[in-house]
Amino acid sequence: MKKIISLLLCIVFVFAMFGCSKKDAEPAAETTTVPTTVAETTTEAPVNTANPLTGEKKYNKNAIGKRPVAIVVENLSPARPQWAIGTSDIIMEGEVEGGISRMLWIYADYTSVPEKVGPIRSARPSYVKFAKLFDAVYIHWGGSHSKSGYVGGYETIKKLKVDDVDGMNGGKLFGRDQTRSVSSEHRGILYGDKIPKIIKEKKFRTAASDTITTLSFNDKAQAVGTDKANKVNVKFSSRTDTRKFAFSTKDNCYHTDDWKTDVKFKNIVILQDTSTYITTPYKGSSTTYLNYDYKGGNGYLVSMGTRTKIKWDTTGGTLNLRTADGKDLKLNPGKSYIGFSSTNHDGKVTFE
Image (cartoon, rainbow, N blue to C red; front, side, top):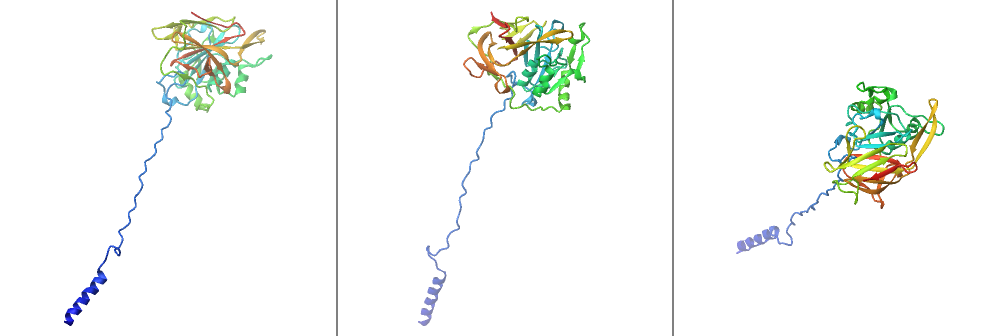
C-alpha cells in the first residue's frame, strides 16, 4: 500500500514540474509585418527635339540647346544668286544704306552651314542687334565705324559684347570665289563646314543663354487667318526695291525669284518698325546709314495663302511675336523670312 501511495505522489510531482497550460505556455515568436511601399514615379518634361527656328522634327540632337550663328550676306545684283541661299532657317532682310538692303542668315545648328556661303558682307548696327536677340555668333566681313552721330557696326559689336568672327582678320574660314566675273567685294565667301572649328578655337560659349529668342509653332501647317494672301509685296522704304513672294499650292510655300533663283519659305513675317537715317562723311563724299529702332509695333504673319495682323517687341532682349490680341504667335513648321518695313520712311506691304 505504501508503494502505491509513493508511486502516485511521484506522478503528481512530475506533472507539476513539466505540465503546462495555455496561460503558462511560452509565447510564440513575434512576427513583424513590413509595410509595402510603392516607388513614386516622376515624369520629366519631354525634351523638345524640334529645330527651335523652324519647328521641324528632324533635327540634330547634338545641336539641342546650342547657340545659332547669324551670317551677314550681300544683296546687290552682282551677288545674286547668293551661294547657298535658301539653306538657312531664317532670312532677315532690311535696308542698310543708300537704298540697298542686306540679309542676315540664321542657322540654328552651326554644324549644318553649307560648305560655301556668301557673298559675306560687313557689319551694320541693326544686324548686330538682331543677331543679339537670338544669342547668335555673328559672322561678317568688315564693318562700319562710328562717326558724326552714327554708331557703327564694330562699335555695336563691342558695346553689346557680341561674339563675332570677322573676315578682315583673315583665317581659313573666308576666301574669294574665282568663278564669277565681278569685283572682289561680291566674291567673299564663307567656308561653313569650318565654323565648328573656329568656334572651338575662339572658345566661344556654345550653350544657348536663357535670353535666347524662342519661336512657337503649330504641330501641323494651317491657315493663320481668314484674309487671303496669294501674293505678298514688301518694300522696306521709299528708296528700296520691292521683295515679291507668290504662294504655291503645290508645296504650300511662298516663292521668290528676286535672288535669280527660286527660294521658298513657309512663313513670311513682316515687322513694321520706325527707322533712323544718319548721314556721315564717306570717302570724300557722304553716305546715309539706316538703323532700325526695334521699338516694336505691328506687322503681319503670312502663311498657307492667308494672313493675319500681329504685334511684336523686343522686351527682355528677345524677339517676341504675338497675335493682335496679345497671345503668343504660332508659326507653321518650316523656314521663315523676316522683313523690316519702315513705318516712317514709306515702307509698304501689299497683298493680292
